[in-house]
Image (cartoon, rainbow, N blue to C red; front, side, top):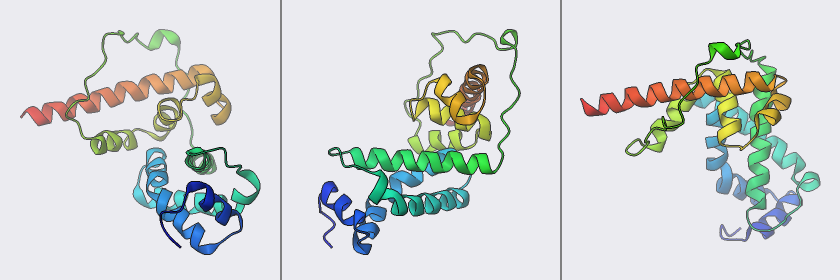
Length: 188
């Protein structure tokens, strides 16, 4: 099978469970989906397990649950499936979100405190995200990369909106600390 077939043709062949098409689907989108898995898990081995399980789900459900809606719709659907697989993995592991904190305990972050990420490789930034505690990392990923609101995150994870916003704040604070440490090391 030619690697340059259109996304629409690839979908049609995958829906018929054409083995070459399924293999091409994996080859074409595996890297981007692995990046999603790495964002939600702490290590490569776990991410590979999630990726494997996610592709099994994709192969089983593409025929019945995906409707092609134009260029880019396949990648969007694959990404949603993989995010859901990663969240399911975290739920199965019974990730315990940290207890809610009182609003008084969370200091306000000045709006002007935005950090400059220039000069920091994206691989280093993603490693810093992977190093966040699981609860922080999960909320951070859903909020930043999946564009979910705290209300949606709360529903997805079975937590309160306040817990979601607290987790996000703590993740952002810890990430900024890691970024500042990285920059200081670079200046030495």
